[in-house]
Length: 137
Image 1: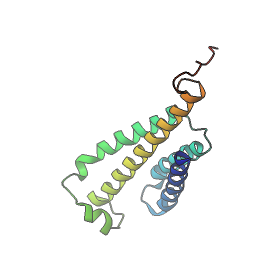
Image 2: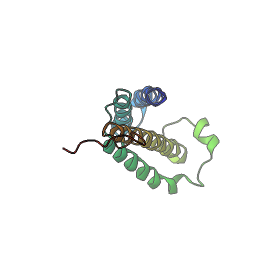
Image 3: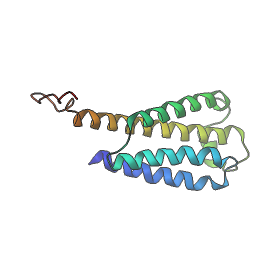
Image 4: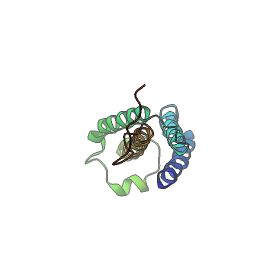
């Protein structure tokens, strides 16, 4: 129940994140990233998320965020990330983008782990002590 609630909250957040990208200089990049995260969270709410897709998105966004770190670290501070809202590039904008990617990576890690655990439970592998193993197909 908690897993579905967290996934639903993340789904709504990512839909909002995607919606506010309309005024970004490169919305064609960010709307698909946040849209894919929203879709996978929504699928997790329904118990249908495919863990390899969530894991792939987590890995891709974390790797992407890592490429931004050198342009942000030491060039801006946390206050600038929240106080400078202009979309003219620079370390503050890239810092927000980096943290957005980290949020996606964390959420997709959660979804991947939840979906994989559910798959193992359905297969009988995570049923606990004394459970009968699933029949081989």
